[in-house]
Length: 187
Length: 179
Image 1: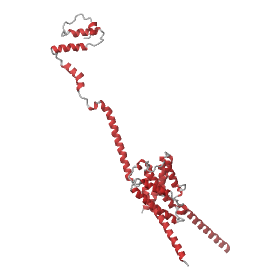
Image 2: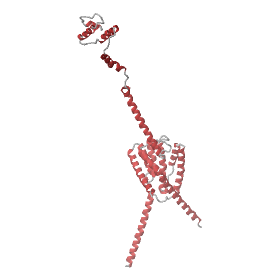
Image 3: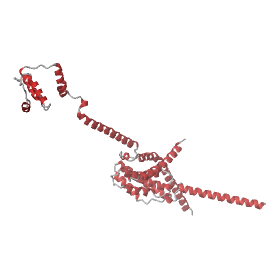
């Protein structure tokens, strides 16, 4: 009888341990998927963020001097950066990339006569920025803006269906972000 | 008096003088015999002129009124402005121009308003954003609203990365200090 009870205790302990391990594994996978874990190489993210901060300030200065061509050239030079992978620098790096490309495309759309690009070339820049896996990113304002810009470019190309789809996608993301902001601002 | 009438009209009793009122009757009779073809008004006008030159012929008030209202008044009275012919061409043109001015000015005011409300979208005051579709403008405004929080969030993540780096460096340094 004692053996039966001790065997039952061992089985329960093993089940509990297996449950804990499974839960921890699922949580780890979930956090990794959501990009909430610290990047594997935080120094890459920090270096990237510092570089971009300086470049953004340079672009601000150029725009203040009405040098749109210079600002566009500065942002174009950032396109040539070797952008770190999400596995290395976390998804914050992807958001930083979307921010840079979004600013570049906004300037290009607002100033079509400065170093002109065709709608197809703009579309290529947008695709390059978003990549194939942007949907797995946590909802954020920079990616939403990139998607909206992609819609604007699709409209320039005369592809109204693609533009509408992109606008709807961006609106959905923004709606979620606004709700989050309101929930965060609520007492 | 036309030669044709003089030849073709067989007047049995010709009036003796041009001042004789029988001339008018003779001319009318000749016209009737011609089957009302042609006109004797010019001849009659000459006869009346000659008679009037000799002794002024008084006009009855009814005849005066008829003359005035039938020919003179319409010829010399100025037309009211709303009856002038050029007005019918000019009025639609002016109305169209005014409508265009109103519409174009409203459009430019709207663009200026949009540009003023979206400083992030048009930092240099360019009105190009207004030329883009309304959905794009709305999304750009939303981004302007969300941008601050998004940048703070990104900054926080980078700071956390800095914290991790610092702790890693400290850990390496303390491991290096160990004998």
